[in-house]
Length: 596
Ligand code: FEO
Ligand code: CA
Ligand code: CA
Ligand code: CA
Image 1 (spheres, rainbow, N blue to C red):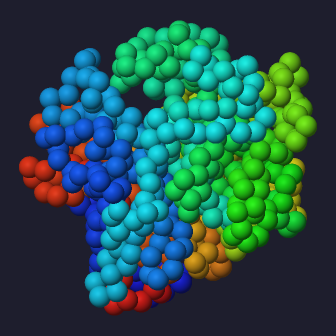
Image 2: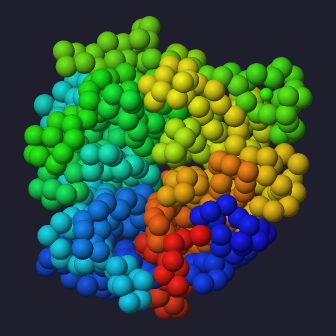
């Protein structure tokens, strides 16, 4: 692996070798600590974690399960506000003697309370470098599967989202399956509702099928305890999930919002940049094999400043504008893309693309650009609108992030083992491998660098896998000097302009981890592994600051057949203790910046 001193600035650390250790492994000279675990009390009055006596009431005041996206927002005085997604629950790893066929009401209600979002003040210990939670701070907050949300934007109040409990079609209880997200320039956080289909039972409409909702009982059997999860009884309830959620974490009394203008699909996340005249643009991937990625361009300008009026205005920015879906065209002859990953004769997987408008929302109403669908239908059944528009079927679009330095946009495409199977789409230049196990990262350049451009160019910056596999590509960097990588999922940028990539489900025989990659300059494509996570875990939510890296260690010990009684991992607290998803902080022991 790469040497230390010659590396790109920000990547000057000894690369962590691929491994299967049941721990978080960091480079030599770096320290780490667990910032907060599932079940630690964060609200006033919440009890300490007690695995033998868990209650829904306790969980509602404790840190939730399966931390995914993380955001760190400034507070001053060495403190920051940590916002975390709690994507889903692993009941067999949470409850002793869990019977998946017969969950109890208390277990189900604990799971409701373990989903959602968490807000926790954290502070740095200047002596040790560790980051610790300030429990019971007044800004700490839990949002769960039963917290009230306001549905906003063009589909709010429409007949498609009204239920017996909410005839207004504007009040939704809870958020589910929040995977990744983003931090807005106005100090709020965005959270993608991803695989919401799994919580609903007895769905049979064509539209349900397109979203993966099933015909029988749901995996967690929540429909037995609240009829809104039974689509046969409450057909519109699933139409109220699958949105981008916005939270103002600085105001613990604020009502979180679901923005229908960014469409309804399995949002991996949502990330924001501004146009030259100050209008937000949101990128969001739909994480499903052969699904699409999208862009929303607001027609409203962000207001600067922290006044109540400015904050209230900014919480409506994502309700008016146009939603687009991406269509990509390769520039090499189709016969040169044979599905093996062999590069075409021009040497690049690259081409051009267009953003196809699906619908526009204004203060006075909404207009559809898709024949045969109303605007409300486009915003609620967005996948069907993408189908009609002829969008490009991608290899599972995950996190998307624009470089704050160059404006180039990076789209993580995690894998797609169904590519090229009979009856499924075959390889194309942007998705060039059939039975794609390892994934790729696409670099997109908006025309003239404008965030609201309608056209773009693209190329594959990274074709992941074992560097010895001739199909792999690392931005042109020598392949004998990079770390192996598989299944890119979350992406973020460090203060030096390097792209950091976390993985989920790596298929190279070693654990998932976090990697830094140079995207500019003479060392473009240099890729180095910064850390690895324990058995069964996915690396999520990376935040890379000058002096600290934060990761969410999600679903440690999630291995087929594992349970509380038969754990597959002993992380983080050792044998005999429950495996607990946790947030981990990493810093440099000599106090200097990461990777310099
Ligand atoms: Fe929850 Fe697309 O990963
Ligand atoms: Ca080409
Ligand atoms: Ca993810
Ligand atoms: Ca994932």
